[in-house]
Amino acid sequence: MMLRNAIILVGATALAAPISAQTGWVPGAEIVGQSIQVETNGVTNTVYFDPVGSGRIVTPSGTTHAASWTASGGELCLYSGGGKECWPYQVPFQAGQPMTLTSSCQATSHWLASATNPMPAPPPPPPTPAPERG
Image 1 (cartoon, one colour):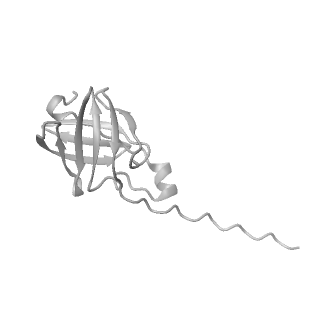
Image 2 (cartoon, one colour; image 1 turned 180 degrees about the horizontal axis):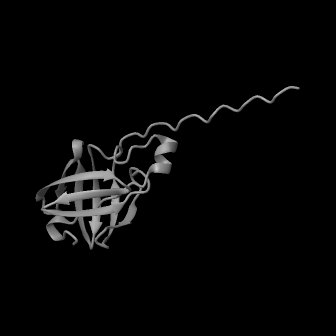
Image 3 (cartoon, helix red, strand yellow; image 1 turned 60 degrees about the vertical axis):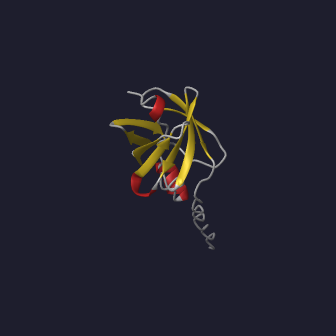
């Protein structure tokens, strides 16, 4: 069931095993303490991803709804008002780069993070073995 109007939820999920192994990315780490503008059906809410899985959804009229969130199992899920909505989360959010995601409720949303937390540097490549002499 899509949470609508005052609580239109938008999110992303993280099927991050390949990315995590290559970059050290922890799904959700780039958005902790940040907010994302989420537009669904012409309505833009601001979702705040507070630490320890707490969050807030602020509607265009300024109404704030308590929420919580998780980023695991290949999904970013938002919980509010007894409802749950999840989005596929394949790559980390990047500031200023919009993402279009379709939720578990089949609603298509446009996500835009204005800021994200820095990502760790990728690990160095493995050393190249020296050729054998013989």
